[in-house]
Image 1 (cartoon, rainbow, N blue to C red):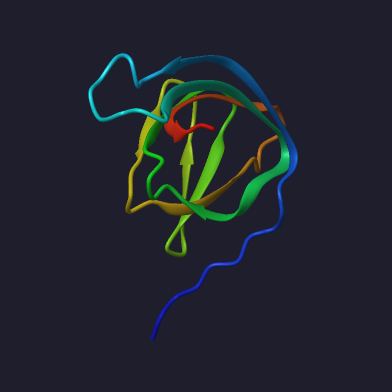
Image 2: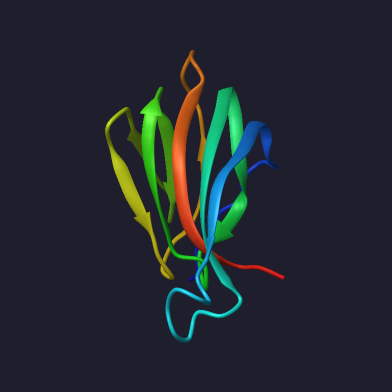
Length: 114
């Protein structure tokens, strides 16, 4: 039997692009990709969904403020300030803020750009 998770659509989320680096000139074989850093704020009751994966888009997350609940494979894990996690090709998840203060994270990933 397969498990398929369902999450609400994104709501209460603000994403600010902080910086990018074009990786093509930096690393052989990385043409068309960039390293991206974003500041993501999830308001109380906010959701960063729907369920999504990180195939071909590896990254890391670091929590600056509040608590973010990460939902993976039916398991909800809370992460607070000073904690981070990897998002690799095996990551399929969605995020929410169940707390009473905005949750703020730094998200760094490698993405394709046009």
